Amino acid sequence: MSANSQDLIVVGQGAAGLAAALAAAEDARRRGLPLRITLVDKASEAEAGGNTRWSPSNMRMAAIDRVEPSFVHDMLAATKFQGDESYFARLAKDAPATVTWIAAQGIEFIQPTYYLAKGPPRIQPVGGGSAVVSQLARAAKAAGVAFRHGCTAQSLASEHGRVTGLVVAQDGKQGDAHETLAAAAVILCSGGFEGDGASMREHFGVGAETMRLISPGGRFNTGDGIKMAMQLGADRAGDWNGMHAEPVDARAKNSAPVVLVYPYGIVVDKNGRRFFDEGGGLVHETWEWFARDMHFKTPGSIAFAILDSRLLAIDGYERAIRSEVPPARAGTLPELAKLIGVDAENLYATVASYNAACVGDPEKFDATRCDGLAATRTLQPPKSNWARAINEPPFLSFPLVGAVAYTFGGLATDECARVLRDGAPIPGLYAAGEITGHFYATAPNAVSVLRAFVFGRIAGQEAVSFLLGRRG
Ligand SMILES: Cc1cc2nc3c(=O)[nH]c(=O)nc-3n(C[C@H](O)[C@H](O)[C@H](O)COP(=O)(O)OP(=O)(O)OC[C@H]3O[C@@H](n4cnc5c(N)ncnc54)[C@H](O)[C@@H]3O)c2cc1C
Image (cartoon, rainbow, N blue to C red):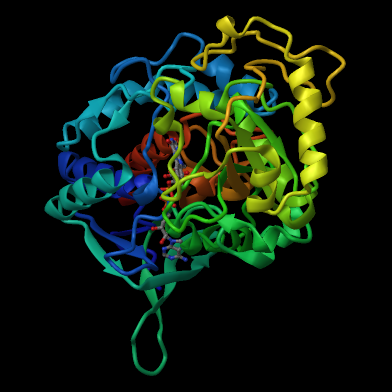
């Protein structure tokens, strides 16, 4: 394997990989470095793009050129102060220039209306992640990046601890499908391990392997890049018991059929019993643990949102329901219980005790913020906001299951996107996006795509500097 190769390989065609490849191509040209860049993705061209392709790609920015002053603090608070401050500070610093650069590739950004509750300010690319994947792939091709689809990265080649290439397997190749591509630098952007049942079970326990993937893109993210780098001695980081999960309609077949109106009613298990505070915070503050508890702790890993006709009077309620299947609907609670297969007596008793605890003024109800309309403290579990009696037929229900979007455990990287081994950079190895371990406890809302762009671009630029340095 040539240690003098002027090749850079990027693994993965999501937000991180595309930003890395395009930034490297632009920087190499600007700095006069003749560089061959190849982006490999294990999926076919039609399916490549991982989670990014299926993501609305909301990004936590006040505007295209500005993050909120509290950004770094908010990130660290989400990680329960276990996150790396220098990583999040670099994210905040580079986000405006990065998003401006993405916009210059022909991607328009808007300020979206989020589900129902507002929360922090966000921007969103028009057309979501699928527009990002196609526009950035087009720009990268125009900048000279070669793409290989159906090409699975399997391991890193190295000499004396530094990266010299990538071993890949090409779909459809006759005979020995393995091939070693020479590369003086490799940027790993191959996502988390949510698509690998065995790894899910290893890190989250029995039953994790049956957790639904929230989008079709997740099945390609089987932790390959994490394993490859760890074989080279890379350090692990992030919360290996952390994942981003959301409640989805158990019946729906469409991608990400989230049902985010549960705070405005109650949620019961199939025995008809409540098991958490549905109004414990804005939906993006409760969805992760609700989805996990539903999968790992409720009988049959299923639960039911129970609402009444007042849901239909909430302005824009449809925005918070992405299921293709309408709710079950009945004139009485026993009929609803029968329709959804929940213990009818228990459901009746649960709703009765919940209704009796809803003593606040229903006029205070406001779906767009934590309205403080709490049930009496005797109700267990409590209901801290949006506690209105459920008594106006028709009664409505969505059956829900927890679905995983992505995992938190990954590679340790520094603020220059270099992969670390015993705390020091591995020469020629970079990583960005979901594959890196920077989230702990709960996912900071609307940051996964943003950090994939920012650190993907940094990785591309750093790799070019590294290669220029090697030329002397
Ligand atoms: C439905 C949904 C909604 C979301 N909403 C938001 C949101 O609003 N805001 C937000 O910030 N985040 C959101 N996320 C999360 C976010 O989209 C992802 O975390 C982010 O896009 C990941 O980007 P990435 O480039 O790291 O990985 P991905 O986009 O997942 O790309 C990884 C790529 O690597 C390829 N790959 C994997 N293994 C190999 C291998 N061995 N060899 C070659 N290629 C390989 C895969 O095929 C894939 O193309 C959402 C996710 C989903 C699924």
